[in-house]
Length: 286
Ligand SMILES: C[S@@+](CC[C@H](N)C(=O)[O-])C[C@H]1O[C@@H](n2cnc3c(N)ncnc32)[C@H](O)[C@@H]1O
Image (cartoon, rainbow, N blue to C red; front, side, top):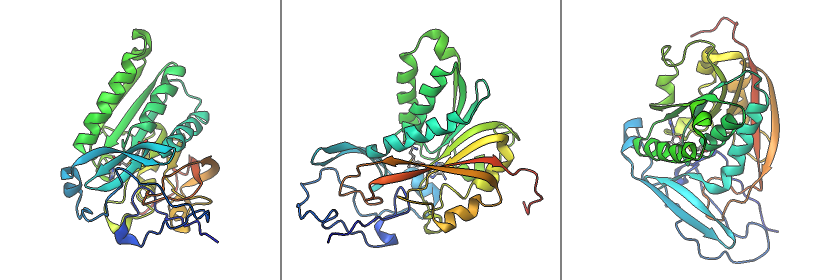
């Protein structure tokens, strides 16, 4: 019997965090076709935020039979891959499903390949507008994101374009969420946070560690969707950040086709978690 080995931890559970095995994934005995543009071993794993910003950014193609797509490498670490696009699109759709305010304010944490940003722009267009904040640490990735977004906006009418406001922040999420001028209390309707573990302590929880800071900036009706990166359920250590902070959470699943050389996920479906009703009024340590 073949094993379905799922390496958890989302974008980049790189080699240093554990062995990766993609032998005979489905038990079919089929030898994988040659893969192009495979992610290298994470020999360049960053030790600081500053190091991350200096890493070269490269978008390569992966090819695994009929499974093809683009892969974003930062310093050789695979950070985002095209097979995840449906996950991002579903997540953004779920977030918007719960938002009933006119021209909501949305926060995208982590630009990556811009799938979440593109989906948010499309929702904004269909709903007569939105304010979208994008926070991204890497200067090159933010530049590419701006180009992609501008290309999308150019395809719209002048009237549509005028209803969509994009704010690009080249910053670390952990710093910018403390900035009350940029993010006042009760200002965010929906947040998609999908980052990358920049230190080993953040593995699996890089998109969850901001839950506490989000409570301040989210409206009481706000919706928060962190990247889970699991096939079935969030990990206990992920849920620990949600418990006592959000009253409701719901799950949907998206079927995915990661190529065999994906270093961080080999499952066939991926969970989308949406957290609602931030518990804003409890006394807290900070
Ligand atoms: C997995 S990608 C995001 C993918 C994105 N959701 C999409 O749809 O393409 C993670 C991104 O988060 C950025 N990032 C990681 N840690 C960060 C942090 N602490 N603050 C801001 N950006 C961060 C990375 O540079 C990378 O571009």
